[in-house]
Image (tube, rainbow, N blue to C red; front, side, top):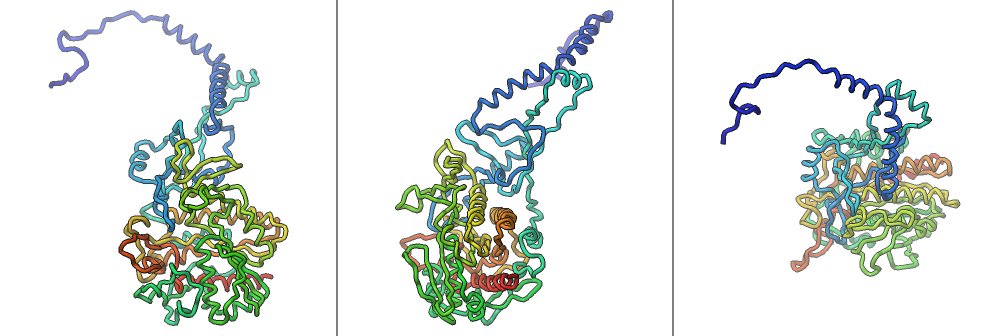
Length: 541
């Protein structure tokens, strides 16, 4: 097929006929440009009135008109993402919470300035896993001519701006990810700058470890008893944490018991919180064993060291807020989370405690239904198409805000609250439910691994909410402190049970455990931190 090189038909040459200039069109255009500016404000007002009626007739999920000034965006509004569901297992962990990237990357390259699209059945906010907080920028407003301004003033109409704000995401530079030193700067507003930063450092050799074994401590749970189930290497037991600017002594059980004489300590959280508590009991077993005075045989336990009048309690609260099972007999079914309601069980229990360590993490990757004001507002990995699908960031921030608000509301609580930050998992060569494992046998070096993706987001959310709690605590007289386990544990991929939390069974496939920590193991260093943090509290008082 041949194409013509010109849009004009081939044949007789084209000629232009000369005509006299016509004045009538020019006169008509002049009149139009004279009349339109006079009536333009009222026309524009009429059209905007229709727009406002349409907006107000839509449901609560529609975009509302933006006033002249854009209010600062609350972090609570920035945690919405759409995810693809993942299987439910007893060891909930990372990978399936991150949105699938390939389709979104192509779509974002083609439409970089478009707002997230809205579906009739559900609201889907299309975002990226490397997107952090977002800023809302208004569209520039057109400046009215002087004649328009006079007409607007005369009509007494106050112009409203119905422009939809653009959502401009701040991206993490994948080629130059944040260094660990940059991450430490995030803690400057919530930690005591006058003392040594215990949590900035590296793991160094310690030939003296470990300080107990599975034979000397009965408090080790089976799935963390790596030595019992045949883990062949022991080098992961020969490290200690060395801060950059000071010394961190190895845990001294006698010194600790003298420090907490007449005191009480509570752990509020999930199985990793229990993992920490069991490490403490094992380290203290070199001096004395506690007496179990638990009233129940469930996850809530209590021990007492009578000679020191010191007691330890574990309050099971993996979500920190009021929670209901959708199926009382099946923990793999979705949970109902009432994100703005207190969990009154642990809240009322801690009132007499001197120290509380609060934490939460991997349970927020499970299927869940989210309620605010007793109204279903979203879900994570639910099958319903008429419910907004959001990420775990949505619930994680609200859960910590509600938990800290609960503590600040207590009239009789006078203790010190430590936020123990998120401890990353270390699945490699696949997600947790598809053969992912943590088979390394030594720690990462200081700058060999950086905090990124959902680990970084969870960490930042915790620091944000701790800062808010500290600000409220100044009014109530309560202390909130940072117990930063994130950076030290990020560097310990070698410290998980992996397949050594059970005997092998060729007929049963069980995911490797790269969430919890071997006992003894790297988690023992958390009690080195704890002693130093308690010393600082005693010194301040």
